[in-house]
Length: 159
Image (tube, rainbow, N blue to C red; front, side, top):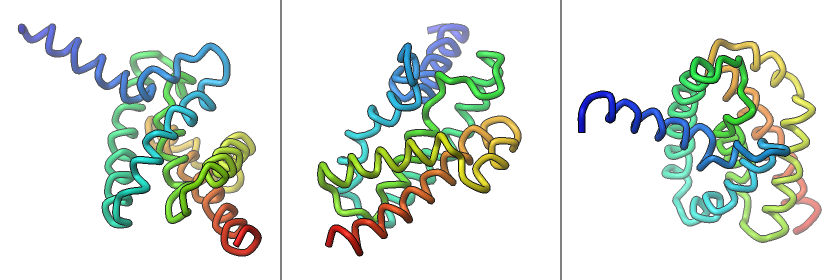
């Protein structure tokens, strides 16, 4: 394999990651599609220890910053809708330390999507960060808000 083929292959891998297995190419609501495509990963992560879960989310976050920055240049768009790795990381944050069940996944999904859409403070400000940092950080904030609400619902209302 020559150098140009290697580069093309690595570029496809970055786009595959940034669009979360191309779920970001959904013709309608790519952020929602990306969040839905994250559910199998949420289930897998539920079997990890807390430190390993956090490590994986942090790794995915930093890889997401790099991949998002690449896609911003590639697609010539400050926040390409195809890039949904931010939704993936945000939803993983939403589900951290939550007992996994169909009800918790559905509730977490709804809470995260609402928080991602309304962008509570400081999510909107986080979007203004440069390149991939802005793409990723607003969803981190949305995930944190959704996690807090989900924790309250799960601990004080459901149980």
